Length: 139
Image 1: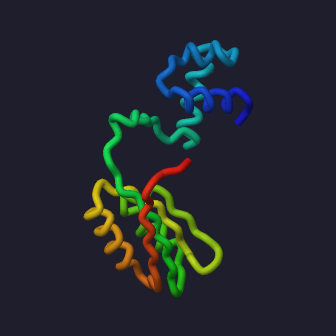
Image 2 (image 1 turned 90 degrees about the vertical axis):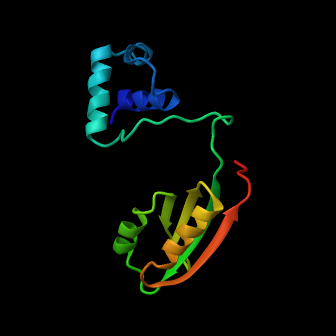
């Protein structure tokens, strides 16, 4: 990835709907060259999707929680496969130390969050789960 690809990614991250011609003008490439580069970045998986960010007035309420999971024994390959099947999991990190996996979960209701907790408690070899509900996003 060269400086042009990085510049394209930066501009698309600011506004994914801006015209390709505008991107080209900003970085000094033709519309066709920018279009080809974007297509190659998509093909390589560098760009995986385009999304929107809703304004605060349009955002639906979510319940957020962190889950600390400890397994004995810990099979990361199997756990990855199983966690990918729960759409409310927005982030999952394998950790060193006492906790094996840290999850960030967003659910549309406390009831659904509780259901996710039950799904997690059924994971194989789960020794311990700690749930921490997030009250307020600070940063």
